Image (cartoon, rainbow, N blue to C red; front, side):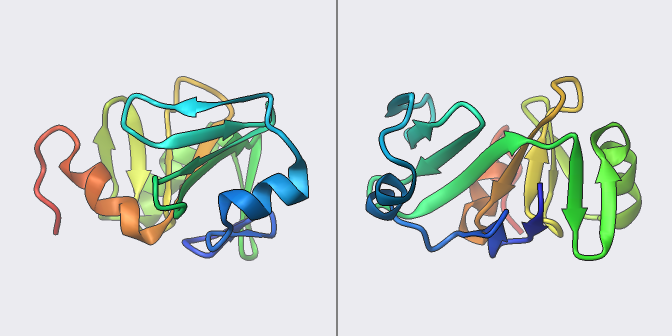
Length: 133
């Protein structure tokens, strides 16, 4: 997975609309509303989550290796990398969230990594009662 934090994942920009995604990839394997009120389009290898307005919130995909600029981090080392590189990182609902790199992942669930749009960080921060900063 190649991540440009808050900008794009593997070349897909966070400005992508649901209609553009359907044109590019066709119908998803599964589509529906998730437990936090986002509309998911699941293609098996990648899941896109949109607000009702069509704004892209998250892109989740398997990432045995994460590429951040000129740094390559294996999933097994991702938690320690985030701990060392992002002093603002926090845990929520079993996920390690990195505001610096715009990602969230469950270290116990290899290799799924969720890239976040900048505007959805406050929701992750307030999950579990932490006020956004």
